[in-house]
Length: 187
Image (cartoon, rainbow, N blue to C red; front, side, top):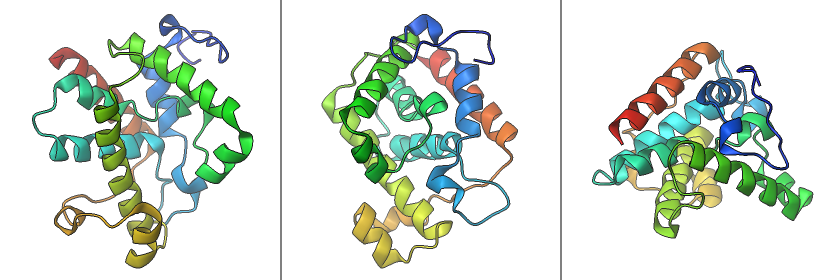
């Protein structure tokens, strides 16, 4: 990793994990395999910031630790990339096991339980689906009915509240890092 840490993908430990490595990696991993409109790729780091904002909006009384969990929901992708669901399924259960091990190490590194409570996972997934819907319509060329079909019909009141931002990777990396540090301090 850029931090100088060595990350054993098959047996990661919390001590292998640095937020700078996560933020940098996610700021250069394109969602939608880069097939989006705009001058910059829409990155997993930017997506994670949006999911966090949506999660907070939908769960205003949630403890700050769950805001951090929302920010880190795709953190393993800093080393394994963003794979679309059909490819994950084709790779098989090994991909899920790898993702689970990395997630557990990341969560433990930042003071979260290795496995999130089911209700929190559901709430983060709900925010994630709204983000995917917005991405599909705003930058990936989907019509609203197509997005509804793939990501579920979303609350119309929320659709205009959030907008996709495309920024240079370093700006996104820095905001992701800042947000993580701010959430950790607030815990």
